Length: 479
Image (cartoon, rainbow, N blue to C red; front, side, top):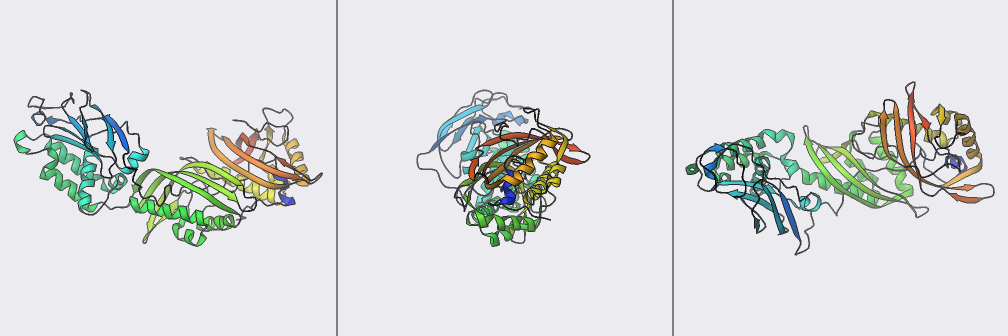
Protein backbone atom coordinates (compact mmCIF):
# COMPACT_ATOMS: atom_id res chain seq x y z
CA UNK A 1 0.00 0.00 0.00
CA UNK A 2 1.28 3.46 -0.91
CA UNK A 3 1.28 5.57 2.20
CA UNK A 4 -0.03 9.15 1.72
CA UNK A 5 2.76 11.70 2.00
CA UNK A 6 2.84 14.43 4.57
CA UNK A 7 2.25 17.99 3.52
CA UNK A 8 5.54 19.84 3.14
CA UNK A 9 6.51 23.01 1.33
CA UNK A 10 7.30 21.93 -2.18
CA UNK A 11 6.16 22.33 -5.76
CA UNK A 12 4.45 19.00 -6.10
CA UNK A 13 2.01 19.81 -3.29
CA UNK A 14 0.97 23.11 -4.80
CA UNK A 15 -2.07 21.68 -6.51
CA UNK A 16 -4.08 21.15 -3.38
CA UNK A 17 -5.19 24.70 -2.55
CA UNK A 18 -8.78 24.65 -3.79
CA UNK A 19 -9.06 21.93 -6.37
CA UNK A 20 -9.22 19.32 -3.63
CA UNK A 21 -9.13 21.46 -0.55
CA UNK A 22 -11.35 19.09 1.39
CA UNK A 23 -9.78 15.77 0.52
CA UNK A 24 -6.52 15.55 2.45
CA UNK A 25 -5.96 15.59 6.21
CA UNK A 26 -3.15 15.06 8.66
CA UNK A 27 -4.67 13.40 11.68
CA UNK A 28 -7.64 12.20 13.56
CA UNK A 29 -7.16 10.48 16.87
CA UNK A 30 -9.24 8.41 19.27
CA UNK A 31 -9.61 8.97 22.95
CA UNK A 32 -6.99 8.98 25.48
CA UNK A 33 -7.34 10.12 28.96
CA UNK A 34 -8.80 13.14 30.57
CA UNK A 35 -7.74 14.08 34.05
CA UNK A 36 -4.28 12.89 34.91
CA UNK A 37 -4.17 9.14 34.97
CA UNK A 38 -7.97 8.81 35.07
CA UNK A 39 -7.91 8.15 38.79
CA UNK A 40 -10.53 10.16 40.56
CA UNK A 41 -9.41 13.44 42.07
CA UNK A 42 -11.54 14.30 45.13
CA UNK A 43 -13.60 17.43 44.89
CA UNK A 44 -12.62 20.38 47.05
CA UNK A 45 -13.85 20.36 50.63
CA UNK A 46 -17.31 21.82 50.92
CA UNK A 47 -18.50 20.69 47.49
CA UNK A 48 -22.18 19.75 47.54
CA UNK A 49 -24.64 18.28 45.06
CA UNK A 50 -28.37 18.11 44.46
CA UNK A 51 -29.53 14.55 43.79
CA UNK A 52 -33.01 13.86 42.49
CA UNK A 53 -34.96 11.20 40.67
CA UNK A 54 -37.71 8.68 41.25
CA UNK A 55 -38.37 5.49 43.18
CA UNK A 56 -39.72 2.74 40.93
CA UNK A 57 -40.95 -0.47 42.52
CA UNK A 58 -43.57 -2.10 40.26
CA UNK A 59 -42.94 -5.53 41.77
CA UNK A 60 -45.48 -7.27 44.04
CA UNK A 61 -44.55 -6.87 47.72
CA UNK A 62 -45.91 -7.91 51.11
CA UNK A 63 -47.24 -4.49 52.04
CA UNK A 64 -47.11 -5.18 55.75
CA UNK A 65 -43.36 -4.59 55.31
CA UNK A 66 -44.17 -0.94 54.60
CA UNK A 67 -45.56 0.91 57.60
CA UNK A 68 -48.33 2.79 55.78
CA UNK A 69 -49.90 -0.04 53.77
CA UNK A 70 -52.48 -2.73 54.49
CA UNK A 71 -51.09 -6.28 54.93
CA UNK A 72 -51.55 -7.85 51.51
CA UNK A 73 -49.57 -8.67 48.36
CA UNK A 74 -49.81 -5.73 45.98
CA UNK A 75 -47.78 -3.09 44.16
CA UNK A 76 -46.97 0.12 45.99
CA UNK A 77 -48.72 3.15 44.51
CA UNK A 78 -48.00 5.73 47.20
CA UNK A 79 -44.32 6.31 47.99
CA UNK A 80 -44.78 9.26 50.34
CA UNK A 81 -44.11 7.03 53.37
CA UNK A 82 -40.53 6.38 52.22
CA UNK A 83 -37.56 8.25 53.65
CA UNK A 84 -34.76 8.97 51.16
CA UNK A 85 -31.25 9.63 52.51
CA UNK A 86 -27.73 10.23 51.16
CA UNK A 87 -24.69 11.67 52.88
CA UNK A 88 -26.61 12.63 55.98
CA UNK A 89 -29.30 14.48 54.01
CA UNK A 90 -32.87 13.17 53.99
CA UNK A 91 -36.23 14.01 52.45
CA UNK A 92 -39.64 12.53 51.71
CA UNK A 93 -40.65 11.76 48.12
CA UNK A 94 -44.09 12.59 46.78
CA UNK A 95 -46.73 9.95 46.15
CA UNK A 96 -45.30 9.12 42.71
CA UNK A 97 -41.85 8.47 44.17
CA UNK A 98 -40.15 11.64 42.97
CA UNK A 99 -37.51 12.83 45.44
CA UNK A 100 -34.85 15.52 45.78
CA UNK A 101 -31.88 15.81 48.12
CA UNK A 102 -30.16 19.19 48.38
CA UNK A 103 -26.58 19.94 49.38
CA UNK A 104 -25.40 16.35 49.61
CA UNK A 105 -21.68 16.40 50.43
CA UNK A 106 -19.18 14.56 48.25
CA UNK A 107 -18.17 11.07 49.33
CA UNK A 108 -16.38 8.34 47.41
CA UNK A 109 -18.79 5.77 48.87
CA UNK A 110 -21.97 7.79 48.38
CA UNK A 111 -25.19 5.73 48.36
CA UNK A 112 -28.82 6.84 48.11
CA UNK A 113 -31.14 4.79 50.33
CA UNK A 114 -34.93 4.79 50.19
CA UNK A 115 -36.63 3.03 53.11
CA UNK A 116 -40.17 2.47 54.33
CA UNK A 117 -40.74 0.00 57.12
CA UNK A 118 -38.74 -3.09 56.17
CA UNK A 119 -38.54 -2.25 52.46
CA UNK A 120 -35.26 -0.63 51.37
CA UNK A 121 -33.74 0.31 48.00
CA UNK A 122 -30.21 1.50 47.21
CA UNK A 123 -28.35 3.27 44.46
CA UNK A 124 -24.63 3.91 44.39
CA UNK A 125 -23.54 7.35 43.12
CA UNK A 126 -19.90 7.05 42.11
CA UNK A 127 -17.41 9.93 41.79
CA UNK A 128 -17.69 9.61 38.00
CA UNK A 129 -21.47 9.93 38.31
CA UNK A 130 -21.00 13.16 40.25
CA UNK A 131 -18.76 14.52 37.49
CA UNK A 132 -20.51 13.34 34.37
CA UNK A 133 -24.05 12.01 35.00
CA UNK A 134 -27.38 13.78 35.03
CA UNK A 135 -27.97 14.03 38.77
CA UNK A 136 -31.64 14.87 38.22
CA UNK A 137 -32.50 11.41 36.93
CA UNK A 138 -31.21 9.05 39.62
CA UNK A 139 -33.76 6.24 39.67
CA UNK A 140 -33.99 3.71 42.50
CA UNK A 141 -35.17 0.21 41.59
CA UNK A 142 -34.38 -3.44 42.34
CA UNK A 143 -31.74 -3.74 39.59
CA UNK A 144 -29.76 -0.78 40.92
CA UNK A 145 -30.26 -2.02 44.48
CA UNK A 146 -28.70 -5.35 43.49
CA UNK A 147 -25.74 -3.57 41.86
CA UNK A 148 -25.21 -1.41 44.97
CA UNK A 149 -25.29 -4.49 47.22
CA UNK A 150 -22.73 -6.26 45.01
CA UNK A 151 -20.49 -3.18 45.14
CA UNK A 152 -20.74 -3.08 48.93
CA UNK A 153 -19.90 -6.78 49.20
CA UNK A 154 -16.98 -6.23 46.83
CA UNK A 155 -15.47 -3.61 49.14
CA UNK A 156 -15.26 -6.30 51.80
CA UNK A 157 -13.25 -8.38 49.33
CA UNK A 158 -10.92 -5.43 48.60
CA UNK A 159 -12.58 -4.84 45.22
CA UNK A 160 -13.91 -1.53 43.94
CA UNK A 161 -16.35 -2.85 41.35
CA UNK A 162 -17.75 -0.29 38.90
CA UNK A 163 -21.16 -0.36 37.24
CA UNK A 164 -19.48 -1.50 34.01
CA UNK A 165 -17.76 -4.37 35.86
CA UNK A 166 -21.05 -5.52 37.38
CA UNK A 167 -23.06 -5.12 34.14
CA UNK A 168 -20.71 -7.24 32.02
CA UNK A 169 -22.69 -9.74 29.98
CA UNK A 170 -21.07 -12.80 31.51
CA UNK A 171 -22.33 -11.75 34.96
CA UNK A 172 -25.99 -11.18 34.04
CA UNK A 173 -27.09 -14.40 35.76
CA UNK A 174 -25.24 -13.53 38.99
CA UNK A 175 -26.85 -10.09 39.17
CA UNK A 176 -30.23 -11.54 38.23
CA UNK A 177 -29.95 -13.94 41.18
CA UNK A 178 -29.66 -10.97 43.54
CA UNK A 179 -32.70 -9.29 41.96
CA UNK A 180 -34.67 -12.53 42.27
CA UNK A 181 -33.70 -12.86 45.94
CA UNK A 182 -34.93 -9.30 46.57
CA UNK A 183 -38.25 -9.99 44.84
CA UNK A 184 -38.86 -13.14 46.90
CA UNK A 185 -37.89 -11.47 50.16
CA UNK A 186 -40.27 -8.59 49.44
CA UNK A 187 -43.10 -11.16 49.60
CA UNK A 188 -42.15 -12.53 53.03
CA UNK A 189 -44.33 -11.72 56.04
CA UNK A 190 -43.23 -9.02 58.42
CA UNK A 191 -42.23 -11.56 61.09
CA UNK A 192 -39.63 -13.10 58.75
CA UNK A 193 -37.77 -9.79 58.26
CA UNK A 194 -36.08 -8.60 61.49
CA UNK A 195 -34.56 -5.44 59.96
CA UNK A 196 -35.00 -4.76 56.23
CA UNK A 197 -34.99 -7.12 53.25
CA UNK A 198 -31.41 -6.01 52.47
CA UNK A 199 -30.08 -7.67 55.61
CA UNK A 200 -31.67 -11.05 54.94
CA UNK A 201 -29.21 -13.91 54.37
CA UNK A 202 -30.75 -14.86 51.01
CA UNK A 203 -30.05 -11.38 49.64
CA UNK A 204 -26.62 -10.91 51.24
CA UNK A 205 -25.41 -14.35 50.16
CA UNK A 206 -26.47 -13.80 46.55
CA UNK A 207 -24.69 -10.42 46.50
CA UNK A 208 -21.58 -11.89 48.12
CA UNK A 209 -21.46 -14.73 45.58
CA UNK A 210 -21.70 -12.26 42.71
CA UNK A 211 -19.03 -9.95 44.15
CA UNK A 212 -16.60 -12.84 44.61
CA UNK A 213 -16.83 -13.82 40.94
CA UNK A 214 -17.01 -10.43 39.20
CA UNK A 215 -13.63 -9.16 38.07
CA UNK A 216 -12.41 -5.63 38.75
CA UNK A 217 -11.62 -4.56 35.20
CA UNK A 218 -12.80 -1.06 34.39
CA UNK A 219 -10.05 0.59 36.43
CA UNK A 220 -7.55 -1.30 34.26
CA UNK A 221 -9.21 0.05 31.13
CA UNK A 222 -9.00 3.59 32.47
CA UNK A 223 -5.34 3.14 33.32
CA UNK A 224 -4.63 1.68 29.86
CA UNK A 225 -6.30 4.70 28.26
CA UNK A 226 -4.24 6.93 30.52
CA UNK A 227 -1.07 5.31 29.25
CA UNK A 228 -2.27 5.80 25.68
CA UNK A 229 -2.83 9.50 26.37
CA UNK A 230 0.71 9.94 27.63
CA UNK A 231 2.06 7.96 24.67
CA UNK A 232 0.60 10.63 22.39
CA UNK A 233 1.76 13.56 24.46
CA UNK A 234 5.29 12.12 24.57
CA UNK A 235 5.34 10.87 20.98
CA UNK A 236 6.44 7.44 22.24
CA UNK A 237 6.16 5.06 19.29
CA UNK A 238 7.87 2.15 21.06
CA UNK A 239 5.31 2.10 23.86
CA UNK A 240 2.50 2.56 21.34
CA UNK A 241 3.54 -0.74 19.75
CA UNK A 242 2.67 -2.51 23.01
CA UNK A 243 -0.80 -0.99 23.40
CA UNK A 244 -2.04 -1.69 19.86
CA UNK A 245 -3.13 -5.28 19.31
CA UNK A 246 -1.24 -7.19 16.60
CA UNK A 247 -4.75 -8.16 15.37
CA UNK A 248 -5.94 -4.54 15.18
CA UNK A 249 -8.58 -3.74 12.53
CA UNK A 250 -11.12 -1.02 11.73
CA UNK A 251 -14.58 -1.93 10.50
CA UNK A 252 -14.68 1.13 8.28
CA UNK A 253 -11.16 0.93 6.83
CA UNK A 254 -9.90 -2.33 5.34
CA UNK A 255 -6.33 -1.01 5.17
CA UNK A 256 -6.09 -0.44 8.93
CA UNK A 257 -3.79 -2.82 10.79
CA UNK A 258 -1.00 -2.75 13.39
CA UNK A 259 1.68 -1.84 10.85
CA UNK A 260 -0.36 1.03 9.44
CA UNK A 261 -1.03 2.50 12.90
CA UNK A 262 2.64 2.41 13.86
CA UNK A 263 3.81 3.76 10.50
CA UNK A 264 1.30 6.59 10.66
CA UNK A 265 2.31 7.79 14.13
CA UNK A 266 6.02 7.31 13.49
CA UNK A 267 5.75 9.74 10.58
CA UNK A 268 3.40 12.06 12.45
CA UNK A 269 5.66 12.45 15.48
CA UNK A 270 8.50 13.69 13.21
CA UNK A 271 6.68 16.89 12.28
CA UNK A 272 3.87 17.35 14.80
CA UNK A 273 3.25 17.21 18.53
CA UNK A 274 0.11 16.87 20.64
CA UNK A 275 -0.13 19.88 22.93
CA UNK A 276 -3.36 18.62 24.47
CA UNK A 277 -5.11 15.25 24.64
CA UNK A 278 -8.30 15.31 26.70
CA UNK A 279 -10.96 12.67 26.86
CA UNK A 280 -13.94 11.33 28.73
CA UNK A 281 -15.18 7.73 28.81
CA UNK A 282 -18.90 8.11 28.11
CA UNK A 283 -19.80 4.45 28.46
CA UNK A 284 -18.18 1.03 28.87
CA UNK A 285 -19.62 -2.38 28.05
CA UNK A 286 -17.70 -5.57 28.80
CA UNK A 287 -18.15 -8.23 26.14
CA UNK A 288 -17.34 -11.96 26.05
CA UNK A 289 -13.79 -13.15 25.32
CA UNK A 290 -12.09 -10.46 27.42
CA UNK A 291 -13.22 -7.51 25.33
CA UNK A 292 -14.76 -4.18 26.24
CA UNK A 293 -16.44 -1.50 24.14
CA UNK A 294 -15.41 1.98 25.30
CA UNK A 295 -17.30 4.99 24.02
CA UNK A 296 -14.92 7.93 24.25
CA UNK A 297 -15.19 11.67 23.69
CA UNK A 298 -11.74 12.91 22.70
CA UNK A 299 -10.44 16.46 22.44
CA UNK A 300 -7.06 17.05 20.83
CA UNK A 301 -4.76 19.88 19.82
CA UNK A 302 -2.02 19.14 17.30
CA UNK A 303 0.84 21.57 16.66
CA UNK A 304 3.24 21.74 13.74
CA UNK A 305 6.87 21.62 14.90
CA UNK A 306 7.89 23.70 11.87
CA UNK A 307 5.37 26.53 11.95
CA UNK A 308 4.57 26.32 15.70
CA UNK A 309 0.91 26.69 14.71
CA UNK A 310 -2.01 24.64 15.99
CA UNK A 311 -3.11 22.70 12.92
CA UNK A 312 -5.87 20.67 14.51
CA UNK A 313 -8.20 21.41 17.42
CA UNK A 314 -11.24 19.18 17.50
CA UNK A 315 -13.52 16.84 19.44
CA UNK A 316 -14.36 13.28 18.38
CA UNK A 317 -16.82 10.67 19.62
CA UNK A 318 -16.19 7.00 18.84
CA UNK A 319 -16.52 3.43 20.05
CA UNK A 320 -13.24 1.54 20.47
CA UNK A 321 -12.97 -2.13 21.36
CA UNK A 322 -10.15 -3.16 23.72
CA UNK A 323 -9.10 -6.75 24.31
CA UNK A 324 -7.03 -8.29 27.09
CA UNK A 325 -4.00 -10.01 25.57
CA UNK A 326 -1.67 -11.57 28.10
CA UNK A 327 -1.31 -9.05 30.94
CA UNK A 328 -2.22 -6.00 28.84
CA UNK A 329 -5.44 -4.45 27.62
CA UNK A 330 -4.84 -3.41 24.01
CA UNK A 331 -6.76 -1.47 21.37
CA UNK A 332 -8.22 -4.25 19.25
CA UNK A 333 -10.75 -2.61 16.95
CA UNK A 334 -12.18 0.69 15.70
CA UNK A 335 -9.73 3.39 16.72
CA UNK A 336 -9.78 6.31 14.26
CA UNK A 337 -6.30 7.64 13.59
CA UNK A 338 -6.14 8.78 9.95
CA UNK A 339 -7.62 11.89 8.38
CA UNK A 340 -10.34 9.96 6.57
CA UNK A 341 -11.56 8.02 9.60
CA UNK A 342 -14.99 8.73 11.13
CA UNK A 343 -15.47 11.21 13.92
CA UNK A 344 -18.81 9.89 15.13
CA UNK A 345 -20.13 6.53 16.29
CA UNK A 346 -22.02 3.96 14.23
CA UNK A 347 -19.80 4.24 11.14
CA UNK A 348 -19.94 1.25 8.80
CA UNK A 349 -18.07 -0.18 5.81
CA UNK A 350 -19.17 2.70 3.58
CA UNK A 351 -16.85 4.91 5.59
CA UNK A 352 -14.00 2.68 4.47
CA UNK A 353 -14.97 3.00 0.83
CA UNK A 354 -14.92 6.79 0.96
CA UNK A 355 -11.73 6.65 3.03
CA UNK A 356 -10.11 4.56 0.27
CA UNK A 357 -11.19 7.17 -2.26
CA UNK A 358 -9.60 9.93 -0.17
CA UNK A 359 -6.33 8.03 0.11
CA UNK A 360 -6.26 7.44 -3.62
CA UNK A 361 -6.84 11.13 -4.29
CA UNK A 362 -4.23 12.19 -1.76
CA UNK A 363 -1.60 9.93 -3.31
CA UNK A 364 -2.50 11.21 -6.78
CA UNK A 365 -2.15 14.82 -5.63
CA UNK A 366 1.27 14.08 -4.17
CA UNK A 367 2.48 12.83 -7.57
CA UNK A 368 0.43 15.27 -9.70
CA UNK A 369 -1.43 12.50 -11.51
CA UNK A 370 -4.36 14.35 -12.97
CA UNK A 371 -5.89 11.25 -14.58
CA UNK A 372 -6.25 9.50 -11.20
CA UNK A 373 -7.64 12.64 -9.57
CA UNK A 374 -10.28 13.01 -12.26
CA UNK A 375 -11.21 9.33 -12.07
CA UNK A 376 -12.74 10.17 -8.69
CA UNK A 377 -14.79 13.08 -10.09
CA UNK A 378 -18.22 12.39 -11.56
CA UNK A 379 -18.66 13.25 -15.23
CA UNK A 380 -21.86 14.96 -14.07
CA UNK A 381 -20.03 17.06 -11.47
CA UNK A 382 -21.47 20.48 -10.70
CA UNK A 383 -21.82 23.12 -8.00
CA UNK A 384 -25.15 24.51 -6.85
CA UNK A 385 -23.64 27.99 -6.53
CA UNK A 386 -21.66 28.10 -9.81
CA UNK A 387 -23.28 27.05 -13.09
CA UNK A 388 -19.85 27.12 -14.75
CA UNK A 389 -18.50 24.34 -12.51
CA UNK A 390 -18.09 21.18 -14.59
CA UNK A 391 -15.89 18.12 -14.79
CA UNK A 392 -13.84 19.80 -17.53
CA UNK A 393 -13.47 23.09 -15.66
CA UNK A 394 -12.32 21.30 -12.51
CA UNK A 395 -9.70 19.37 -14.49
CA UNK A 396 -8.40 22.57 -16.06
CA UNK A 397 -8.25 24.42 -12.74
CA UNK A 398 -6.48 21.51 -11.03
CA UNK A 399 -3.79 21.44 -13.71
CA UNK A 400 -3.29 25.17 -13.27
CA UNK A 401 -2.76 24.71 -9.53
CA UNK A 402 -0.15 22.05 -10.27
CA UNK A 403 1.86 24.63 -12.12
CA UNK A 404 1.32 27.79 -10.10
CA UNK A 405 1.37 27.18 -6.35
CA UNK A 406 3.15 25.50 -3.46
CA UNK A 407 1.48 24.68 -0.14
CA UNK A 408 2.89 26.07 3.13
CA UNK A 409 0.09 24.93 5.48
CA UNK A 410 -2.70 22.43 4.88
CA UNK A 411 -5.14 21.62 7.68
CA UNK A 412 -8.11 19.44 6.73
CA UNK A 413 -10.70 17.41 8.60
CA UNK A 414 -13.89 15.48 7.92
CA UNK A 415 -16.48 16.41 10.53
CA UNK A 416 -19.11 13.86 9.54
CA UNK A 417 -20.52 11.77 6.71
CA UNK A 418 -24.26 11.51 6.16
CA UNK A 419 -25.35 8.67 3.88
CA UNK A 420 -28.67 10.35 3.18
CA UNK A 421 -29.72 8.09 0.29
CA UNK A 422 -28.57 4.79 -1.13
CA UNK A 423 -25.36 5.52 -3.02
CA UNK A 424 -25.20 9.18 -1.94
CA UNK A 425 -23.25 10.84 0.89
CA UNK A 426 -22.78 14.34 2.22
CA UNK A 427 -19.28 14.82 3.60
CA UNK A 428 -19.12 17.75 6.01
CA UNK A 429 -15.59 19.16 5.95
CA UNK A 430 -13.48 21.96 7.37
CA UNK A 431 -10.11 23.19 6.18
CA UNK A 432 -7.48 25.91 6.13
CA UNK A 433 -4.82 26.23 3.45
CA UNK A 434 -1.94 28.66 3.03
CA UNK A 435 -0.07 28.65 -0.29
CA UNK A 436 2.65 30.62 -1.99
CA UNK A 437 1.96 31.75 -5.51
CA UNK A 438 5.20 31.15 -7.45
CA UNK A 439 4.53 34.28 -9.48
CA UNK A 440 4.74 36.88 -7.96
CA UNK A 441 5.84 34.93 -4.86
CA UNK A 442 3.25 35.98 -2.29
CA UNK A 443 1.32 34.01 0.32
CA UNK A 444 -2.40 33.38 -0.03
CA UNK A 445 -4.35 32.19 3.03
CA UNK A 446 -7.75 30.60 2.58
CA UNK A 447 -8.87 31.30 6.12
CA UNK A 448 -11.45 28.96 7.65
CA UNK A 449 -13.21 26.83 5.03
CA UNK A 450 -16.38 24.83 5.67
CA UNK A 451 -18.26 22.87 3.06
CA UNK A 452 -20.56 19.93 2.50
CA UNK A 453 -19.24 17.95 -0.46
CA UNK A 454 -21.60 15.43 -2.02
CA UNK A 455 -20.34 12.06 -3.22
CA UNK A 456 -22.22 9.58 -5.38
CA UNK A 457 -21.62 5.91 -6.06
CA UNK A 458 -21.32 5.37 -9.80
CA UNK A 459 -20.75 1.88 -11.22
CA UNK A 460 -19.54 0.71 -7.82
CA UNK A 461 -17.11 3.64 -7.32
CA UNK A 462 -17.55 6.62 -4.97
CA UNK A 463 -17.00 9.91 -6.83
CA UNK A 464 -17.30 13.60 -5.99
CA UNK A 465 -20.61 14.65 -7.49
CA UNK A 466 -21.53 18.12 -6.25
CA UNK A 467 -20.42 21.18 -4.31
CA UNK A 468 -16.62 21.08 -4.14
CA UNK A 469 -15.15 24.61 -3.87
CA UNK A 470 -12.09 24.75 -6.09
CA UNK A 471 -11.91 28.32 -7.43
CA UNK A 472 -11.04 31.47 -5.49
CA UNK A 473 -14.52 32.84 -6.23
CA UNK A 474 -16.30 29.85 -4.69
CA UNK A 475 -17.97 30.12 -1.26
CA UNK A 476 -15.83 28.84 1.60
CA UNK A 477 -18.27 28.75 4.51
CA UNK A 478 -21.10 26.43 3.58
CA UNK A 479 -22.97 24.64 6.36
